[in-house]
Length: 137
Image (cartoon, rainbow, N blue to C red):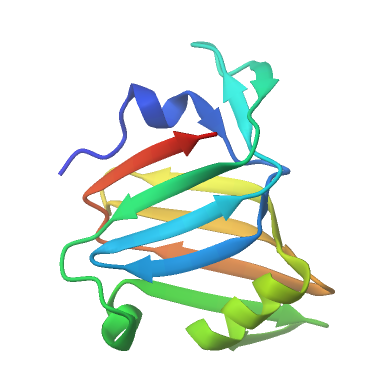
């Protein structure tokens, strides 16, 4: 499935903050209360959106089997530890997840989002992506 399309390349998540994360009916919804960046065809910054959402579609995505499609690693003082989806949700609710790197792999149909939540560095990997859409308020 081709999820890397022109629509995806029109937006940049660097320095954007995930303020909510939900898993509903084969969709993972990442909410950005302060928006994310709009890029031109040369990947140069044009503007910033208002509150927006990134909708990631994954076949058969369910909360009880979410670990088939995600991995969340927390780094704190040079120690790496995999954390639960529930723990990550709590961290997002408490302080958000500020992204400093967003990497997309067409080969693996995946996204790696690296960022910070509170004093922890987080690597959030989402795999088996079928499609990505954006809702911009």
